[in-house]
Structure formats: C-alpha cells, structure tokens
Length: 137
Image (cartoon, rainbow, N blue to C red; front, top):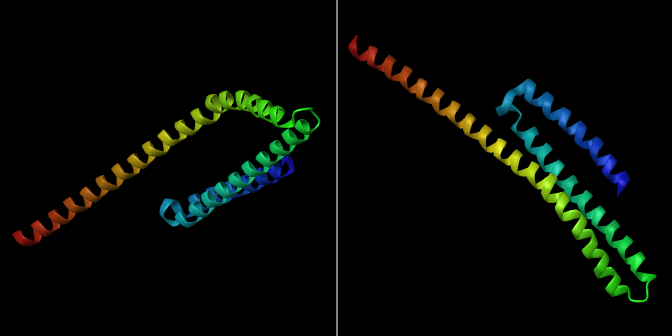
C-alpha cells in the first residue's frame, strides 16, 4: 500500500504538471479535455489507494485478532479503536479541506459565469449600437 501510494503521488504530480501546461497554452476552453482526463485519473488513483489501504488494515487486524483467544471480539475492538483514531483526524483535516476547496470552486465558477455574462452583455450592446447606426443612416 505504501509503495502504491508513493507511485500514485508521482503520477499525480506529473498529471498536475501536464494540466498546468495545457491550461497555460490553451486556456480554460482549450484544455477542458485535459482537465477532465486529469480529474478522472486522480479520482481513479484515489479510489485505488483507498481500497489498498483498507485491504492492508483489514489484513493487519485479522492477523492480530487471530492470535487472541477470541478473534471476533478482538477484531471488533481493534476496528472500533481504528475508528476512534481515524474519524476525528478525518473530520479535522480532510473534511474541512474538502469543504473549503468546494466553496472555492463554487466561487470560481460563479466568477467565470459572471465574466461570461458581462462579456455577452457587452457584445449585445455593441451589436445593438451597430444595428442602431445602420438604421439611422
């Protein structure tokens, strides 16, 4: 799981660089396909890493529980211990960051939509001005 995590990190860094180059060369509209491909790839790697670590934890818990007199009870107790340790850290770090990034993304989308609507209004005004001048002449 650790080797896979490191390899996935390297792949994600490379994909991020590709995304940055595509965005700087072609802008947002031109790089949409690349951005989507990178997002799908990162999501797939995230799921793969998550399942790999889950399998590792499950194997570790089963191995420890199997050497005790009551393996099922011990596996339950160890699972609850992992939950008690992981959930607070997840809520404090990962969930907060996810919510912050979601809010930032929504703000960016609103800003892009606002810019697009303003530019469309300006174009409509320009067209109305040109049509109005043609009708006056």
